[in-house]
Length: 268
Image 1 (cartoon, rainbow, N blue to C red):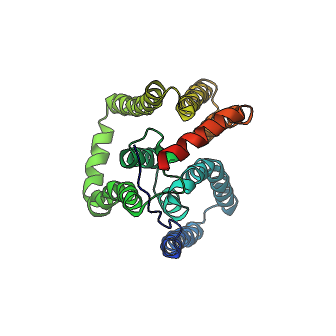
Image 2 (cartoon, rainbow, N blue to C red; image 1 turned 45 degrees about the vertical axis):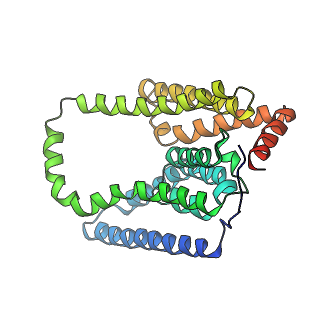
Image 3 (tube, one colour; image 1 turned 135 degrees about the horizontal axis):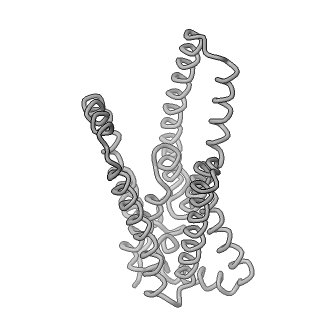
């Protein structure tokens, strides 16, 4: 299917200005609450040594999980520029959701199965606006709901939590497993639907490697008491999955060339 292109500048300076305003707001909010917390800690004579330890450990435990966010931004940069994925993933976005959204919208507009690869460097205004809308409008309702309804619902939620029977954990686990299976089914569907497309089995390999590592990390956390992995397991699993694919690509340049040519063929 031919895809008519009218490329748009996804790195327009106005996008960077918007990103700067949002980041400034979030940083200001963080600093204000940090200062208030430190003042309150001094008022109640909190041990400053313990407080410094909490702050330093919080910083360290924020670095590695952020690698996953950075990977997501890098993954989307070629398709939708730097500013939009940076706004989404550095504030309230989720890597799994954002990449799936871009991939799905790209497939719908181009009529291909190459997803993100089909719009790299050649995204038109209509596709970009649609991707931005799905990435932002669909996620805004959660924060708005908390903003206007949290105070009223919090007492009721605490009451329900005190009466929990453990079934809520089972429900959450079932929902999470369902979400994971959805991502695996997408990778398998790409592989079976386009076996000649190099990207199809790369996606499946990355999913299997990452899922296998998450299983190993879960065993280490629950049975070997390696609690520190709770904050790092997702980022490590993602890096490992992408790393294996990168190594395969490095030692198989013909496969990389086929992937590149496939993407060029879709957008030409």
